[in-house]
Length: 113
Length: 114
Image (cartoon, rainbow over all chains, first blue to last red):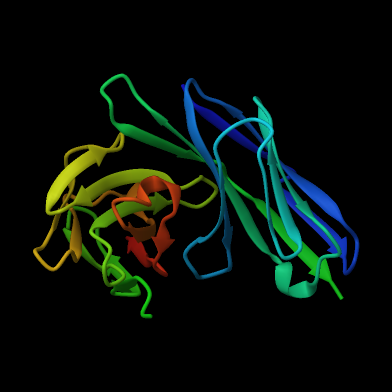
């Protein structure tokens, strides 16, 4: 059974206080790990896809990294507009050749001015 | 460029009724995906349509069904509604090349079953 666990569930930061969000996963045959941002009342917004251990991607104040067991979303000098729920998901192919995507429950980030 | 649109925004039904949710993908996207986001749970994959065909299905009972029309818009039908079907239903779209690797989500339909 694929598992995706995100921690912490909630994180409160002061503006400018850098931190990291964690996504631990258990999946056989990872075909991609995704990070999304979700604002209240809206659908998730795609941020990154990582495919292999050691890969890193950056976008503005966000940097995603991947190891064989977990991914980190590093937030550098966050601003209040970074407040959102950050979702992690993994993709693999199952035995029938179909795609299987499993999402975590997210980390709710609040950045205080 | 217009994003993924979903209708209605909110839908209130009673147990046993049927619900129909609609989704229009981004222009040029042929794949449509449906997800259920229940309170406190992660997004659960429901269905994937591409070029009018059902390509993949999540672990949901057959009363969850859908279709994709020639213009690539899609419809999700939920029959015999149960209280636990109350959730935010999200639609996403992508090009065949992007696939699951880069999906664009709509704002969702909030379904409440009383």
